[in-house]
Amino acid sequence: MRALRGRPGARTWEVGRIDTPVPGPGELLVRVRAAGVNRADLLALGGGYPVPHADDDGSFTAGMELAGEVVAAGPGITGAPGRGPGDRVFASARPRSPSTPSSTPAAPCPSRPG
Image (cartoon, rainbow, N blue to C red; front, side):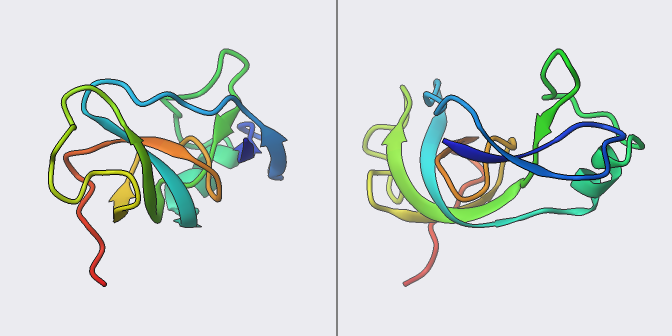
C-alpha cells in the first residue's frame, strides 16, 4: 500500500510502499479517505522529535489523524456497534499510512456521523 514516509533530518517526504497491516486484538483496519499530517510529523521529519514507531533505519510513516471506513476488525471487536466492515470512523491513530488502509486501536475510534 502507499504511505507518506519520512526520515529524520531528510526534510522531504517520499511516497513509498509498505505492507498492509493486519489488525491485531482490539484494532480496526481502516481504509483511509482523509488523513492529517501534524506538527509532530513535521518535527520528526526535521529530526527534532523522537518517533517511537520508526523503522530500524529511522524512517517512519506520517499521518496520525484519519477518517475512513472499517475494512476488518481484529479479535475482540466482533459485534461492537460502529466497528464493523463498512462503518465510517475517525481516529487519532498509530501512523501507518495516509490514504490507504491503516490499523488503529478501536477504543478511540468513534463512529463518524452520517
